[in-house]
Length: 148
Image 1 (cartoon, rainbow, N blue to C red):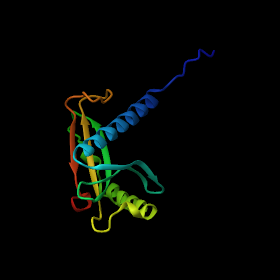
Image 2: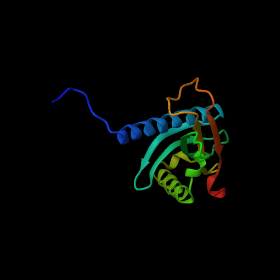
Image 3: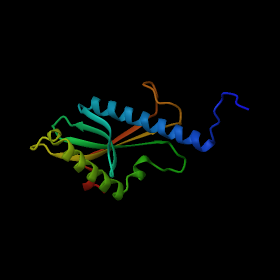
Image 4: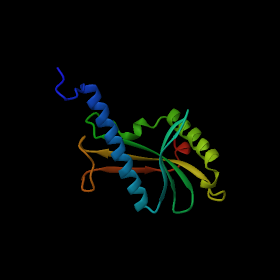
C-alpha cells in the first residue's frame, strides 16, 4: 500500500544529519574566516580524483588558503574534530590544492603563495547551527603540512 510517505532507515537519517552538520560547519567556518579578514573565493570545489576543497580563501596578507573544515558534535569520549586530520588527508588536500592552482592559476598571487589550513567546529549537540548557537568551539590551524 502506498501511503505517500517515504520510509527512511536510521542509517539514512544519520547520513542526512551528518551531511547537514558538515554543511552547517562549513558555513560557520566561512563566516569565521570572513570576520578574520579573509575573502572567500570558492566553496565546495570538487577536484577528482582528489576530492573536494571545502573553502578556498584569500588571507588578509594575500595568501591563497585551501581550508579543510571538520565539524563534530562534542563527544564524551574526548574525540576532537582535529583527530580527523590525518597526514594522508593533508597529502590529499595538497594534491587537490595543486590541481586547483593548475585549473585556476590566477587565483594564487606569486609573491604571496598558498597554504593548507583547517578550521574545526565543535558543537554541543546535533541540532541545526544558527547565528545564535552558543557553546560552538571554532579553532583555526594555519599551514597544516608543517604542523603534522
